[in-house]
Length: 451
Image (cartoon, rainbow, N blue to C red; front, side):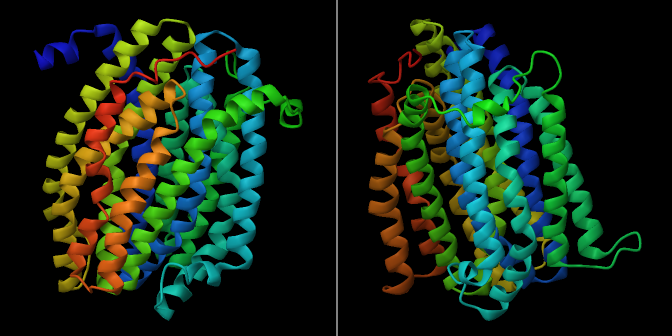
């Protein structure tokens, strides 16, 4: 009965597969950059790997802001695309570019001028701080570019060009990984640059990505950026966009700051826990690619139907997406456990760090079920219908009311073992599952939010 419900709607499965495959591939390729950094820098030494992992938490925070803006494009844009109103979508595109530019400039200034201050937020070890500063001074230039290209990729996904978006991101990642090897280890006569090489590779790849994005949109049937829309302020549209995007931004900020705090706590516990957590974070991000792709794909599908006025069909699509999220969660649990021997073989770590990493992977395998269910249902289905307030409220209760206080007290007051503290950081997603299911069946997300 369960499998028949999941697979009998061939139209749903075909549409979701067409959206999810390129989006998941895009997410996977982006996550592979972090994995490549970890592997290549791990070949140099453990400190370089841990320091860059901590330094990239700055970009992680920036991506929370950019993710909210792109989620706004996906949510409101998907409904207007279902309504076939391309004029409004062009205005949404221009407005999002304006917001992303402002954000990117702020992060560039912070990482370029005050890198040491930022690194002290994540590490207390002078060696890790110095290495992180080297990385941030160069990588800051990529933060200036990323926001613009992400808006281009988001508008492509909404306007039925997800495949192009995936090709651009995937090719960019391949170039990034190749340049990583060239600059970090000094191939083809280029001097070995170590950590600085990893940063330079990122900047070079981002420039390539932006140029390709701009060039692609000049093809037929693509939404093009009209410069006047960047400087046009339509109060009603801005209100609609931020009415649904502001809660997403709040949720992303709460989630991002919370995860950054988790990383900082691991950094405060020492080099070995920080190194083990860096590897666990990379694998976690890789495993989340599929559920992130399903969240975006199902959100676009549900949004298209709701925007077109097909409420019953949009509701049915949401139900199928939530059921599928449990299947993906169980699948991810198995894969995480199977990756342990492969990671141990390729990464050089101290014996203590290896033990920590194995324990973290065991804990993370159960965490993945909650992560998949919450990501698809909250970020995909709920957001598609403009029901965006649930996410920040659930984070305030589960992450800031339970998980983060337990991890903080365990680190600084009770001095719990490292793995117990890590388990505390995984409480929030698993604890939200009953609440998410209860809210889903209220069907407050079944709404048309276009004008």
